[in-house]
Length: 175
Ligand SMILES: Nc1nc2c(ncn2[C@@H]2O[C@H](COP(=O)(O)OP(=O)(O)O)[C@@H](O)[C@H]2O)c(=O)[nH]1
Ligand SMILES: [Mg+2]
Image (cartoon, rainbow, N blue to C red):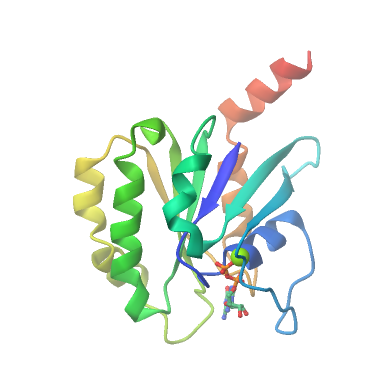
């Protein structure tokens, strides 16, 4: 299973809806999730699916109750929110040192890249203290630049979710 975490309003629900194939545009309103959303994401051929669980950003204190059996984690950062980025990095660090998440694969997702006033990738990574993070943690981190609004980066994220090892495990399980 995969978890989707990140600060409130970073665009988690939008992004997951987009991955799920729901229509989203400027007129789509999502209610900031105070609870949990489940999404069923299909791979590019539509043969396999995976459940992604979004836990509301206001619930960082209870994230830890959802760490069991998690293989992948999509961590969504709003790259347009200057006030939030550094805090998002601290929150990510607190996740990465969690023993139950030692072997989890992480998609560090710089989101809302459609906005002209967003931080560029390198600035955002600097603010997240990414190079320090990378040295100190055990997990494999992959960076994505996405927009739930335009669909940028969505297929890359999908391919990361359904990487060859994951697909092979799914095929073996179906045999
Ligand atoms: N410009 C832009 N706005 C976004 C994007 N994703 C989400 N938003 C806006 O950000 C707000 C919060 O989005 P939501 O998905 O509910 O965030 P969540 O709290 O992380 O689930 C909404 O008002 C969306 O309109 C994006 O990729 N680009
Ligand atoms: Mg949400």
